[in-house]
Image 1 (tube, helix red, strand yellow):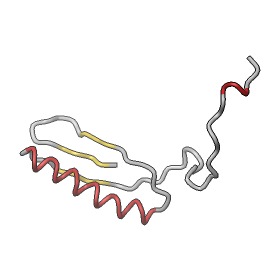
Image 2 (image 1 turned 90 degrees about the vertical axis):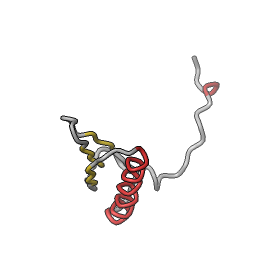
Image 3 (image 1 turned 135 degrees about the vertical axis):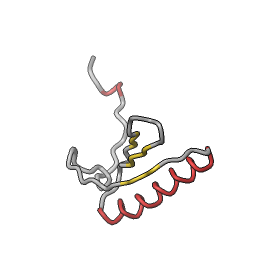
Length: 79
């Protein structure tokens, strides 16, 4: 998750990023993401304070390792 604070703005902006299967992968991507956001804001001429975090979440089982299934053919259903 990236948190951004701008001068003279009374809200913190946030952006969530997901899809990492390990803490190490998230930490690597976190630095890349933070640098990318900083570069974009610098190019816009904006002053911003950015902090990024890796937050573990167990909302759904990962589907990255699951075998791929063929798309469902609607003709196979008896309607």
